[in-house]
Image (cartoon, rainbow, N blue to C red):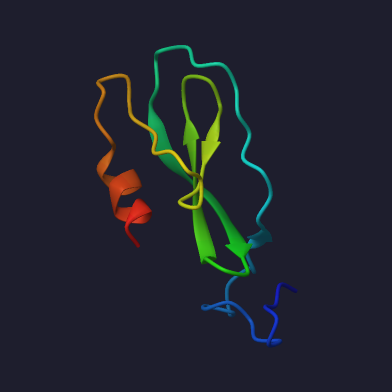
Length: 87
């Protein structure tokens, strides 16, 4: 069970609790980036629930607490990534 410092469950405690946040996987870029949200949710004490995104090209991961923002091979930030970044 994942709880925060107050002992409270993260929002939506009826669902499977999110995995505790860990470092994102990072692999060399293949210049064929295609970022998509995964079914994983991580939980960070400061940021709360984090949607996990994965690159279909290299398998790298991203969550909104990372200091960078992923772009697709087109050079555009995917709409779902942008929405999560500013959540």
